[in-house]
Image (cartoon, rainbow, N blue to C red; front, side):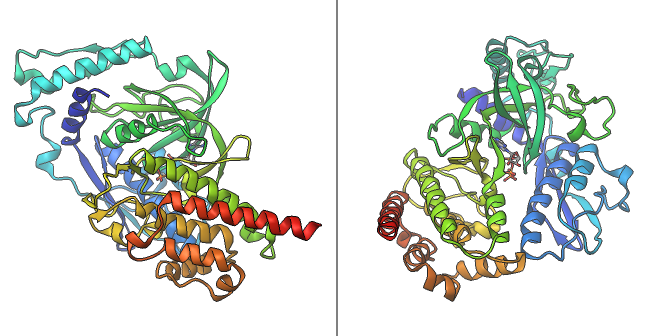
Length: 469
Ligand SMILES: Nc1ncnc2c1ncn2[C@@H]1O[C@H](COP(=O)(O)OP(=O)(O)OP(=O)(O)O)[C@@H](O)[C@H]1O
């Protein structure tokens, strides 16, 4: 990406809305968006992610309440289409009801700040916007939008945004057989066939901001069989909504293209990220499946080792390219279409690793997999090794309930592994304990870990051969 494009996104970042959900007096993470609606939807998504984590650990929590805005009594009519889709798609069982409230945490003075009016930068904004637009239409061949910019008059610059016309969507013109796959904290993912080569891809649509650019910036830098492959990205004025994800949204039709996801703010754009299509099965589902099978079997041990080797391979590669994933968890690891390889995805929280412990944004990542130092501001790539330690333990060790899983993970974070586990998996126990060491410098590098796991796999193979002779 051009620096000018990034400047543009830095400027847009100042024009923000913030929302947080409060459920039964518990505050969930603050979400941001470039419109109130987008911030509300992001708040719903972040809360859903947090609830998913929480309900795994404690199934008492209810999440099927209808989301209502601004503290209004919950009612199905008050939820936005996206939110009601989220509420209705929740699979967690309900035991109690709870009240959900949206709180606008925006700083009004910032939220109303005219776009591009800060730091005397309006003409830079116009220039960046223009260069962004021209590169967009060059790459997509479809623009259909006009730019109204008068860079000689800075007072007009807050209007230096696109006037929306019904631009043809590159997504719907280049792709067909579009199917909704799911949503994450930041956007929705679709399976779609690119007409030209008649090949299927996953297309993730997120609001086009700095975080999204960081994700594609990193993905475009990576090519490894254990990392979800990136192909392309482009920007559109509107998001895509199909019949499922749009719910009863006015103006949307099943499988059609609508601007129901567009916002009143014409500067809000959406980044479409075209990626390798994986199976709709995450490592989380694999673990859950294994946990329903009994008893703890040797096949699980072998498969877990092979999966751990692949994840470590991917992480070693990511680290070798100078990145830290920061959000490794079973939900973010998918199976390739051939079901043979696992692939690391969701690079939304990726950052650079300059080898030194540097001051970073605090508290990034999913709480239950986060290394202890990640709650602060100074950490390095070893946070990924900590998360991997917990994942390897979960791969290997059968638990029977969400409650047990919670206990095992909480203790493991303090390097206390189940006694039976230490007995049954002596080598793995030592490796995992080191990965979970409180001091990041004691945790192994991904390359060392890979070597250890390769040796372990070799030893297992040999002992199996001996057993069959
Ligand atoms: N390349 C892909 N192929 C197939 N399915 C995918 C692909 N990428 C994501 N998905 C699916 O789409 C859904 C949303 O994924 P996404 O990466 O946006 O969010 P997430 O990882 O679930 O959540 P979060 O971003 O909050 O961590 C998930 O169910 C995921 O399994």
